[in-house]
Image (cartoon, rainbow, N blue to C red; front, side, top):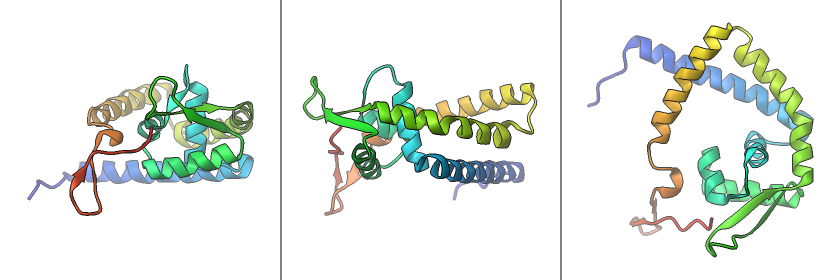
Length: 171
């Protein structure tokens, strides 16, 4: 059996997950109230706004850490709402490219001030500048450690017959 976590590690783990849950709840409330968006929809749009070029569905799935089927559903909703466009990649017939529309950019612009306010108040409201720096360093190191694992798009999925099958998600 694996070694158990030390009491300080358990407290830290639970504090982290509780804080993340509270922050995500407040952000979800704000995004829905001000833009009619779910958290993952906002995350998809924000990644597309920030990208230097259109992204593939695989890039988005790995970037937002969301299931491929869930991402396809969210992308369909965003496309029907006129916030993104999906089209075949000109360089890879298996890939689907996703671009944000003007309406998508406008929606992000609309919800961003409230989003920033929620994050500033809840995440940074009790921290000094030095605390923010330390937290940033720690979370970046943790994220990089976790991102060193293969992305979800590279992990085989179980086929209906129970055998491992390479992922055939159309990116």
